[in-house]
Image 1 (cartoon, rainbow, N blue to C red):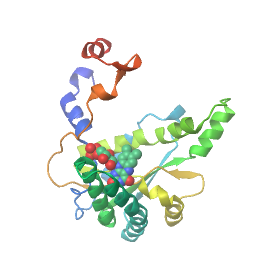
Image 2: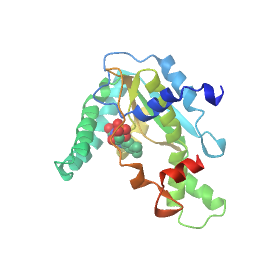
Image 3: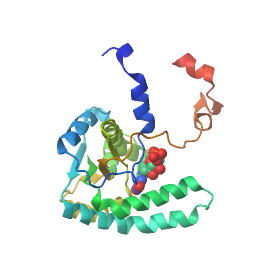
Length: 239
Ligand SMILES: Cc1cc2nc3c(=O)[nH]c(=O)nc-3n(C[C@H](O)[C@H](O)[C@H](O)COP(=O)(O)O)c2cc1C
């Protein structure tokens, strides 16, 4: 398809309105596995290191398994969400809303019809060893973490965008990693496979979403040197 034939408005709309969907998840409508397969096929086109494709995906629909995952998720999540809610000023309504909505998701997780656990064949430790083997001798913590999660999240985000365009909502979560070994045992995830998070998936109520609250671009993007503004003119010159 040529660039001029792309429906850019729709693409941009999906890119800017794919929200963390929690309260609007339709907990009663089943999610067909074929749709999830289709979205995962799309996700497999995401960038990944050396094209090693070390992503792995575990799709969970069994209600007993979902309930067991949800029980662990809640146990790990609740103290963190409560701490967040108590530490954030009451007038920081955006963060308070995220905390309340996250808690809602935890409270209803077993009812969400489908869970996806994106995994990485390896992990941060393995990537640290790989980079050491390749000759790097600096502090590799950040490099290894960037490599490991960079292998997974672009694909997971593609998956979430593909879901969104088909009327399904999802949310990127990772809090259950506080009990990763327990979830690995429950799901039979072998040693050497790292979990990256948990994506609850369901159809959503309502028709559309709006862009979320974000800091202005000018506060977070710089030009040539940290702190220098990325002016409109500079942005359009390089486009
Ligand atoms: C690394 C990461 C971890 C996250 N972990 C959780 C989580 O454990 N639980 C949850 O409900 N949402 C989680 N989220 C979703 C964020 O809360 C959400 O993306 C953010 O509030 C922005 O929401 P919006 O995109 O709908 O505007 C996570 C997002 C990221 C990127």
